[in-house]
Image (cartoon, rainbow, N blue to C red):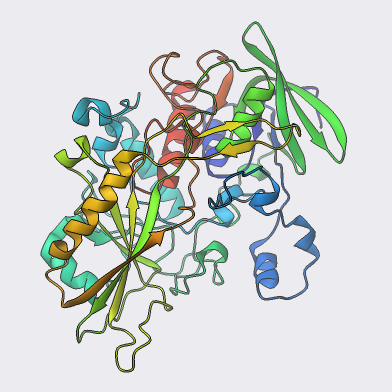
Length: 479
């Protein structure tokens, strides 16, 4: 480390940290000193591709699979994340719909859980900012309030998409996505390979290809291989952060601190530091996803220009959310979605049905005997969500009546949705959450806790765009 004391220490280089830091640097002077501590290492996309293809790479030593970084007693549950430069931007699939305004008002509109301490209207300008940074491809008209065009044109519809869009209008749209619909300076156009976790043509936005240049800023010092595990706190003020690098113990002082890792590690750091908030680590989870295969009678589902080609909102919003969960339809366009019947190979559509879930006390994160390794105790799905699954099965045939449907096959729920939510819930007061509307810890007022761990409720939309908007919002309002 260059200094003994910094203005800001940031943990992680993923979406939450990077978007927060971008806004922070734009608002502060050139004398500021920022230290960024990354658990992993720089692991270039080109080297990930080599390894995926079975080719030799000197970077293979930096592979760090998620299951080696946490204790996961529920072996049926999967938690995907990446611990390297750019965090989970390296393994995400680039889906970036906004939340619906109602997602922020679940208590006042539907009597479910809590309202968020921020509104859609407050986040709206930061949604636009995040969409510009990522160069999002999206449609002109959306079910959520949005004016103007996306930075890039929408991806093209498949034949099934065209019919459903004609039937449902803005309730069925080309998915807003960080998979470029045409080539950019640093990214190619999406070619619908359906290998988005490691995009072979670099079409998907990542921190590596973002062009944000925040980690090249002369105010920022970035250290790799730093496993942050705790903090020293005096009189409710964070004084130092504790980490291990190359087998040696370190501590560093700062005026303010940012925890921008995923919920597992943010919670682990807080608990190791002695955080006594009874809600820290409690109620984490993610949405429930399951696949519905639509067998078509005499119609080939051709066309489409991306992996998730469209989103359907027909089961998302409405009074039913007082009784059962919202469902977002993700329409897959993967080349492996084919029928194994002669002459009917393309007579199929594949829908991923994504259901919101609730933060349950039976799902929680704790520390383990190893101070660097958290434990993910995930046990239950809410009755609210499971009822929505059954309602979907009843309603889907009518929704698809505009198509020549031969049969619908519902597959079992997926082991993961690729999203880790909750554990440091955002709330208006400290009795109902861990952080406030600006993602500042209710008790430790010089500590930001970023990311999807702060989500008050778990709507069905993909979380990444909202994570980025919240980080921009927090840094803009505080600094």
